[in-house]
Image: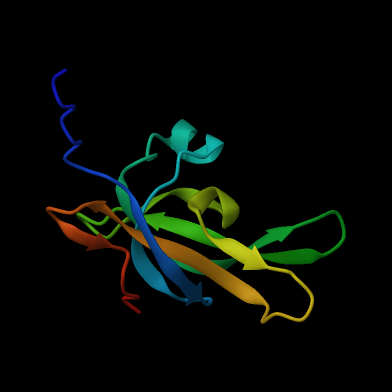
Length: 120
């Protein structure tokens, strides 16, 4: 029986990294519904965590969001999306430190770690 060839790229997850408003980092975009619609799923994109404002019926609302940035030219890509759609999670378990976090991982061992460091 012939041996199966190993895939040249594999995903290896590493420990979580805390994220705060204003952080910018490179991320392999998840296959979420919004990323699929924007056609960025699986691509390396810059992500900046911002506080997005929008007006409701009677007041201004603020919500943390992820602004996607094209890493080739540094321009904003589309509109801000929710943190969860961008692969950023929120800690809401009582007794633990509240905040945002993400995981960084190798997309391909040949190119090294993706999203390992914050580039603020």
